[in-house]
Length: 309
Image (cartoon, rainbow, N blue to C red):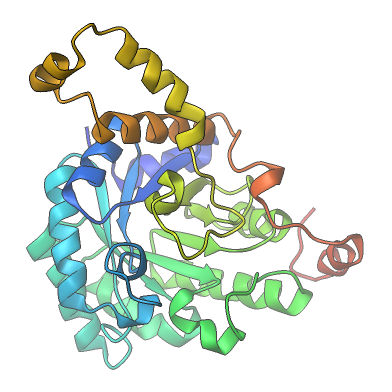
C-alpha cells in the first residue's frame, strides 16, 4: 500500500528510517517498487544520468514529465515526487503552481520538490496554498552550484550551518512536508533533523537524518562520468546471490520465458533490496560514505547559538 506523508511523519517520530531512490523510467521504477522503497524521486538528475546532459540545468519541464509519467506507470503504488527543474518555478508564483500542478495532474505525482531556502519561500507558499505537497532541498543544491563555486560540501562552517538551519526553519514554516539535505557532514545534518518537526532526509548527509536517498544510476553503477563519495554501488555485493539464484534452475532460458527473472530486472531488484535493508538497519551510509569534519570545525559548529546538545 502506498505510504502517505502521515506515514513519513510517524516514521520520523518512531525513528524508523525512510528509504527512497530516484527513478526516471518504467523498468527502474518497477524494480524500486518491488524492492519496497518508501518513496521514488523523479529527480532533475535524470537530465544527466538518463538524458546525458552535462548538468541538471539543461533538462526541461517537458522532459521531466515524460520521465515522471514513465516512473508512475512502473510504480503505481509508491509515493512519487516530481522535481521542478531550473526555469520552471523561479520567475513567478504562477509558473511554480502551474508546473507543480502538471506533475500532479499529468504524471500522478504525490508531491513536488524544489531547491532553495528563503529566496523561494513565496513559491513554496503558493504551491502549498494550491493544495500540493512540497519537499524542500537544501545544502548542495545542484541547480545553484555556480553560486557555491562548484560541487562543494555544505554545512562545514558555522556560518554555512546556521544559514542552512535558518532556511530549513523558514521552509518548515512555509509548509513543506519534508526537506532533503545534500552533501553535508553527519553532525550538522543531524542537528537540523533533530530540530525540525518535518522529516529531514539526506543524500550524502550522514546516517543521523530521518531517511536516505540515492541516485539509482550510482547505486547500480550505470553512470560513467563521476560518482560522489556518498554513493554506494551495490551490484558487486549482490552478484553472487544472483548467480546462486540462477544456478537453482536447470533451464535458465525456460525460467526466463516463464518468469522474466533471468536478467537485469532481477539483478536490479536484488541491489535495491540490499540498499533498502541497509538503510532500514542504519548500515548505510556509515563512515565510508559520509563527509567528515575536523575537530576544530566541529568545535566551531558547537559554539553556534543554534547548536543543541
